[in-house]
Structures are given as C-alpha cells and as structure tokens.
Image (tube, rainbow, N blue to C red):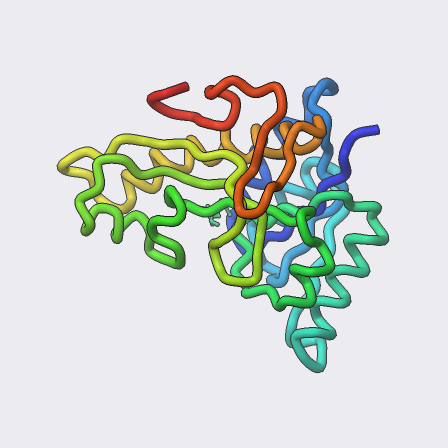
Length: 214
Ligand code: GRF
C-alpha cells in the first residue's frame, strides 16, 4: 500500500501540485490522501479538487483556540489514514502539541538552504547576504520554526543581477523536484532520523542532494 500523505496548505499549492504529479506514476510509493487548508480561498484547493483528492477547510476562527484548531486538523488527518504530513506553504506556526503528535511523520519545505535564512523573505535576504548558492530544504519539523533534521536539499547558483522574484522562480523549480524526492525516500523506508541528522539508506551522494553535486 502506498504511503498516505496529508498536505497542509495556505496558498498557491505548487508544491502540492508537484506531489500530486509525482503520485500519478503508479510506481511512486506515496499518494495524496487529503489536502487541508486554513484558508477557504487558497488556490491550491482547486488543484486538489481537479485531481479528485479529498479537501477540507479548517479555519482557526471556527475554533476556540489553537489547540482546538490543531485537534481538528489532527482528527481529519487521522480519519484520512494519513501516515505522513507534508507542510506545503502552510502559513501557521504549529504548537508543540501538533509537532509531538506527528513527530518524525511531519515534514516541511523551506525556500533556503537551512540553517541559513529561516523565516520569511528568504530570497531577498540571500541576495542581500551575497551568497553564491541558495536553494531549498525538506526537513522534519521540530517545535522551533524552520529547524529539524534535513532530508533533502537542492542548491541553485545566485546570479549577480538576480532579483528576489527571479531567484524565487529558480528555487521553486528545485522545490518541485526536492519535495517528491524526500517523500519517496521516506515512503521507501530508507530514511532514519539520528539526533539532528538524517541517514538515507542505500543512498549515493546524489540521492539527497540536488544541484551542482548531483
Ligand atoms: C514555497 O516557497 C515553500 O518553500 C514555502 O512556501 C512556498 C509555498 O509555495 N514553504 P506553494 O504554495 O507550494 O506554491
């Protein structure tokens, strides 16, 4: 049976789309079982519906507090038989309750080479810092924002005349490769977490790295 993914979104959903597209291949070892948004008008919800995937809007304002909202999200994920939760542009900070509940079954994609540039505006900050390489990271989620064991990274070069927008586009292209790769490695049972590091069984260097080395 394929690993059942629960994807949490708040917006565009292009990474969700990359996972949906990857799962069209019957040999891909995971499938998107449910997409949950905290925003009713998230464009990504249409992508899920177009692919015939179950969707649920779970709005924080419909709940008394954050624990109640997160309990509802957890219940929906469990109900859908989800084995791995993928954050894909989900713009809400998760509480320790939620992180604990899905410990080592909860991953995120972040648009920088962590631990550089956690938080927002990563592309502008990378340009400002003058780094020559930038990229994205798929990592297990821990309570502190944008931390946790790194599963896959993809690097892109930064050009002298890059704007945040064109750098973002170059990184996004790699995000769409990195997220399905990380999910595949996990679904194949090849990923183990050892402290703050991930080991990928049977992997050559190129298995968890996308970019100049791969
Ligand atoms: C991506 O850049 C992702 O790395 C970040 O939020 C953005 C979501 O984009 N966490 P999309 O909704 O997947 O298109």
